[in-house]
Image 1 (cartoon, helix red, strand yellow):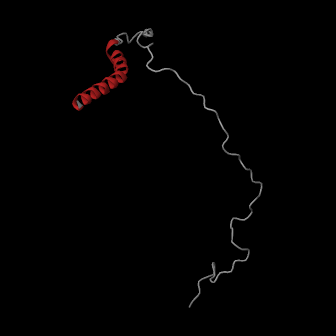
Image 2 (cartoon, rainbow, N blue to C red):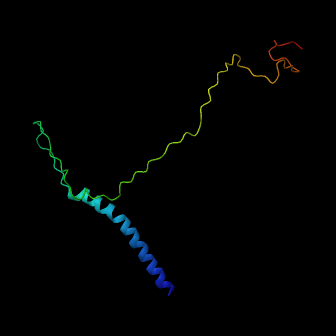
Image 3 (cartoon, rainbow, N blue to C red):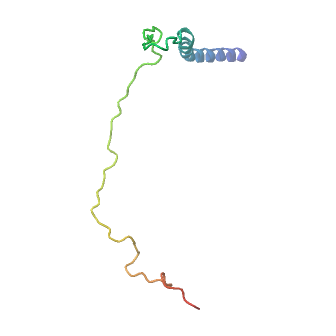
Length: 109
């Protein structure tokens, strides 16, 4: 009984995959094999080639045209800062005293 269920499930899965892939395969084979490609032999003359625009199979749509309009939301508000920072260095305190000199000339010890 389980063997037949596996066979039926496999058959149904293959049938679903084939039904999804078949329109694309048919359209590709039609585009590659059924449209005649003619080589231009009139190189010396200026001419315009006719194009085959009236292909009934190309009018067949595989997917429906669906457009979902997204609503736009403002997620942030720009904050404009008018404070001018005249110094490039920010210290923790105004007079920061360290136990070593930062920019002293080398000393002879």
